[in-house]
Image (cartoon, rainbow, N blue to C red; front, side, top):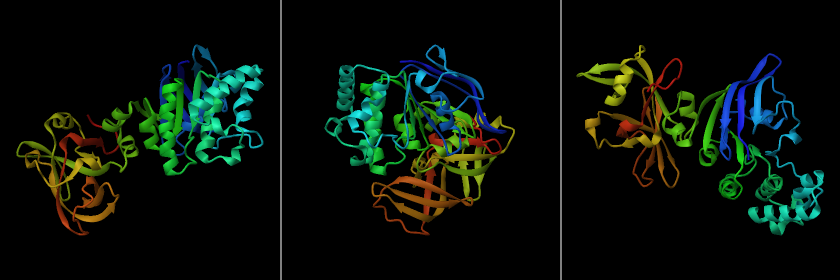
Length: 365
């Protein structure tokens, strides 16, 4: 296995920058997920590590080697693509064996490696079939098996589950977690799906416009987002945002908007009072918006009218209009008797309040 280091990595197409000053150190056996919207540079970064894209400037190290000038076959990496890239005229056995045969590996060793990969992935009974005879999930397992037989230093995954339906994606996420227990390999995984990022990654790297905005554990990304973009991108339903103005009422710092006055918790008030801007953005996740006001002493209750409801079976999502925007509350009892245009008393969990600079989007601690 090997460490991977990206140092001041840049990629431009003509005059258009696609990846900008990316610094990322990946530990041996670590599973790192690059996540972000389309066009953020995550796949381009992965393809530079694979050697499929030239580096404009910067350094890529795999282990102790600088690999910038090496061909993909000499980097000791294995890549799983979005479209599986299987040879349709070959059997599954021959697809798994193809890379080893190109390396002149003895046939006995090939049989052992193919049998090992097939046993790990549960595809032993598919080896005589052709790819067109397999489901999407089975083809994805074959693509993974083709990597496993090679014992590479690094696995690279380029949105490997995006072609699968929702049920199969959930199943394959579990398969990938199991695979990590049996085949511990340094891995870089690219996705636009924040659920995949949160469930698979030891560390999540959020990218936007070619830059890394934040890299941390999934829980830290979720609970302490670096800026408004990260806060809104990670989490489903997305974080609620309300533009507020700071004021002092009865000696306590409050955040106010039309129809809303929230007391700022003491541990946050000291930091916010040092901010020169008095107009900020309040962020709160839907699970921290509750129906009722069980702790009025917190000073986070407010009245609003229901604008929309979404019945999900296990929970009910309720959207109310506050200060000109829709605020969503989740984890509501699905049997709750709520109607459109009904007035409600709601409250915010003070532990779940986030404040962001209105101009830069930076989180204010």
